[in-house]
Image (tube, rainbow, N blue to C red; front, side, top):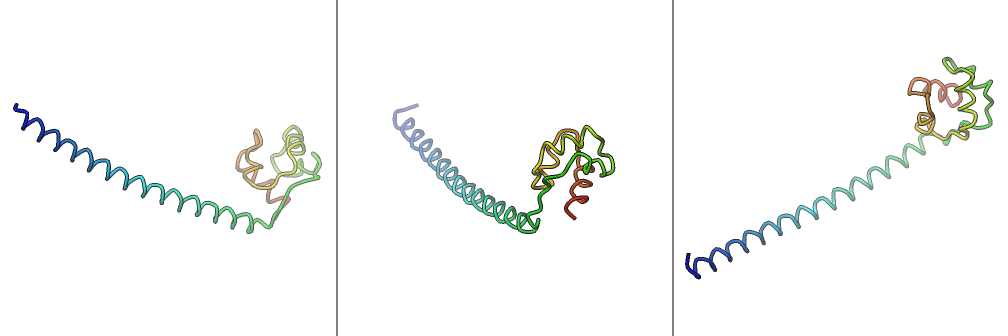
Length: 112
């Protein structure tokens, strides 16, 4: 291979790498725009959910009151009493041993 061939090949490689860099840069800009749109959408939906929830909170409830909910025994009722205030169904679900069915039952019992 001659020096001229080597130089031509180097220029071709350089051009190829430049085109890849341009493509990646353009892709990065698109990703940034998509992420920004996604974040805005999530914030908008979260705000709507907070507004729709009517700011319901489970607080100042005794273990005896929690035990009146089906499938809530004394131990879990004590856990729920200690976890107050409970501001959302998701917060309720995060309590150990509650599960979605019990969480919904508790939320509906006190908030609906």
